[in-house]
Amino acid sequence: MTPYERVRTAFNHKTPDHVPCDFSASEKVLENLKNYFGVSTKEEILRIFKIDKRVVAPKYIGPPLKEFPDGSHEIIVSGGPHWKKIDDAGFTESCVYFPWSDIDKKEDLFDRYGWNGKLEWWDFSNIKEDIEKLEREDEYWIAAHGDPSGLQHLCMWVGDEKFYSILASDEDLAFAMIEQHNKYRLEYALKVLEAGNGRINELMGGGDYGAQEGLLISKNMFNKYFKELYRKFYSEIKKNFDVEIFFHCCGSVVDLIPDLIELGVTILDPIQTSARGMDIESLKSNFGDKLNFHGAIDIQQFLPYATPDEVKKEVERVINILGRDGGYMLSPGHAIQIDTPIENIITMCETATNQKIK
Image (tube, rainbow, N blue to C red; front, top):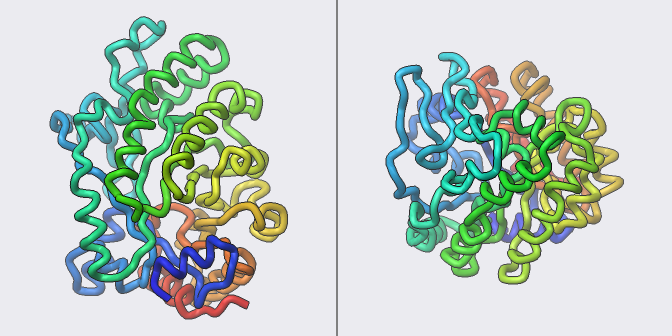
């Protein structure tokens, strides 16, 4: 099977030759892997691990992103949040500056940029060329980012505590912030898919609504502020393009899954198995006929600390549960961090591509 055929078969809830695979790791981990294998690019790592999925994106051509004396830097767009390394070990960066944290009334929003800034800050012309370049290597499963700005996105612009407070106490400002932050989001996603000329198979997005023990906001609050946003957005996407809808949502989100299925989500990521209610047996039993799963290899409590033999056994177990009758793409639950031994990463990927689904 080609990578595309493998993923399509799995997402049609049929059994492929082996489980399809995706891969995510921090920049420091990728550098270590390049040195280990003696290669120079991330693409070479993906080929070594036989990864089926590739992600394309437009080029940012807006005002240059700034760097600051404290070591932080703007992300996404000019005027966006500032991110900074947590430490020198190479773990994922964290937000340290929130550009909308000074806003207290909706009138202050009129000239503020949201997630994409302006549409003219993006060049979509490279997407077709990037896909053609990939297709000269193999027929990959192609994905691209493009989703509404939900809870996670707004928290990055406003700050967690302040935005939660606004959701609870100032309905008008909350809706105004959500509307302003989503300006151009649908147009951006449609332009990405148009540039893909029918070869983009999956639209990636989501928003972190879960913590270890439950949802970060109540279901009532999700329904009030965000559910209709996702419904309208995904409806418009599906009206124009035949793509799978990938929804990243960390933590304990089992209580939200029926709503996500109702909204048109077809792939749920990352299946954070250490969180409450995210047991893969029950998820497969309760939702496996309606949803595809992506992730489920735990990087919190398992992958950094296990032996290679334990990794092999766990990967086999996960494949035989979530991969039964298709409906699963194996991937680390989050970007692999620097505390994970290279031997465990290799074992995870080799086991996945060698393991036949029982």
